[in-house]
Length: 403
Image (cartoon, rainbow, N blue to C red; front, side, top):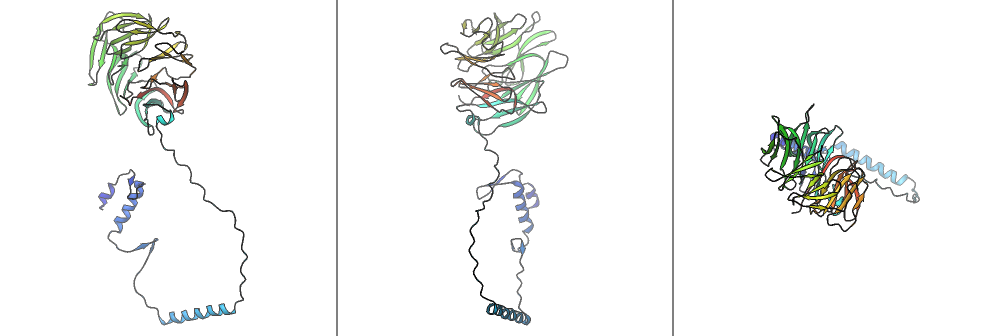
């Protein structure tokens, strides 16, 4: 091997013929030793250099040998007979101390939360107040990637946990710079953004509201990354984008606690009293007013047998992927109810850091950013479990692995 070839050895672990891994630094030392000794055929044993030149013993050597043999014979015949030493009782067996425990094998989320079907994603705050993207697969350890964002920024995951949007506030203004992309790379897209929301059933599709030249507008950004204007109006107050999907958009007006439903082409369909918290791809929206109900974007209301203050003042809500359950997170904990009624709603006192709810793809588990870690609620067993308990989690989601 040449010096150039030796320098090109990777710093990662190398696989040996014996079936194990050796550190690259150790492997380089072996290669370097072979390289420097390639031009010399001397035999090296146990670190001692052997000289194989022939030598002949002289006359004085034979006299010395005879003297030693004679002296040894005298010792044998003149020394008294030695008595055998009495046997000694065996002492306690000394065993080597066990090696220190190495790092535990990385385990997947499904090995910690029995039956969990998806990869878990969490937005984690670091000690330096920056943010990280933590991906915990079903099998294997957590993968961590740094994000170009801090705790003063708003980070949102799409419905599939793979795309991110970051809204960075502009000092002295009510607008933000909106960036989007994957955990491996996020690109600034547009400024002067007032509100934004991911599509409820398509990955990587985002919509936002903003004001440009004094005119309010509603835009979408598709996978191509180009903003497209959906609707604009200079005569109305800009609404807060609460939800959107193939059914259209929901724009919330906090001053009246009502929202406008827009069609898929951006035209006003109707106005509804209440606060919209979430939408489903079927066109149903979870709305809280003087009652909790599902409102259809196409018309129709389905009231739920859940008091609006069952979890305290509600801060977040979500519809399960199968549209069979709803979850509300409030000042007094979490409530989970079946849309069709039947079973009593599940009420749990949970502490939470961020008003964020996410469902597993099989509609069994609810995920919440706890005071520390992620709170996982199993709706089948009514059990509560905390994972990633040392982390400060600002947001949570899943990457569905099923169809």
